[in-house]
Image (tube, rainbow, N blue to C red; front, side, top):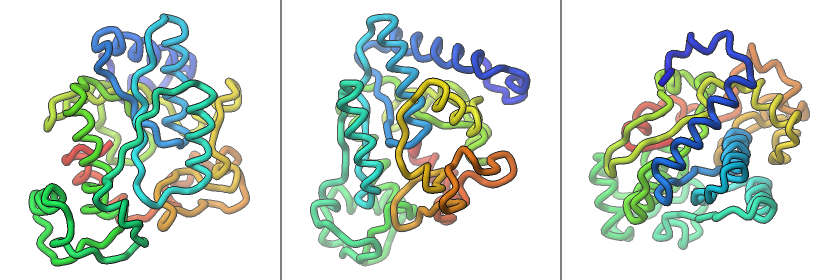
Length: 273
C-alpha cells in the first residue's frame, strides 16, 4: 500500500478520495463488526465520516461505531455539530470520557490531589512517571491527554474487541504526522489505526466540504482552522473564514496551544490519534 508522500504529489483530489474510500471499504469488510471511527466534530473527522457514510450507503455495510471523546473543555459549537450530524446521519455515536475526572466538573488549571483519583488513574499516572502530588486539569497537557483522551479510547478498544480504528490524520497537518502510514499497527491493545485522509491537504478538505456540501462546525467561519480544547484554541485570523486564509503559507495549528505541538511524538507513542 502506498505511503510515501512523494507518490501523491501529482494525484488529483478525485484520485485521493477514490483511494480513501477503497481503503475504507476493504477495512470495513475485513474487520466487520470490529471497526470504530474517531469523531471529533472537526473538519477532518467530519470529512472522513462523510466518506465512511458514502461507502456504507453504497455497499450496505453498517456504519462503524463513531467514538467521541469528551475532554471536559469542549466548545459549544463542536457539541452542536456532533449532535446535528448524529441526528442527520443516524450515527451510532459512542461518547467516552474519564468520568473519575469529569464528574468533578473541574475548571481548567484546577489541581486535583492524585490521592483522590481512582486507583486506575493513579496507576496510569505512575505508568507515565508522573510523580507530583497534584494532577492539574489541562486536557491538552501530556498527562491530561493521557488520562482524558488516550486511556478512555484504549479501554474502549480493548473492551469491545476493536481491530481497526479510522482516524482523520493528514500529512500536511503537522510535521509529526509526516511519517504516518495508511495502516499503522498499534499495541496495548493490538489494533490498526487506519488513516484514509493522509494525502489530502487542508485546502482540499475545504474544496471537498464546499463541493459536496459536507456539514462543518460554525467555528471555522470565525477564523479557527484547528480546533482543540477551548482554553488554548484561538482563531488564526479572527473573522476570516478558514478557507479564505492563506492556507499554503501559514500554519494550520497556529491557534493551538504549542505545548501540545511539542509533545505530539510522546503522545503518539502512548496511543494518541
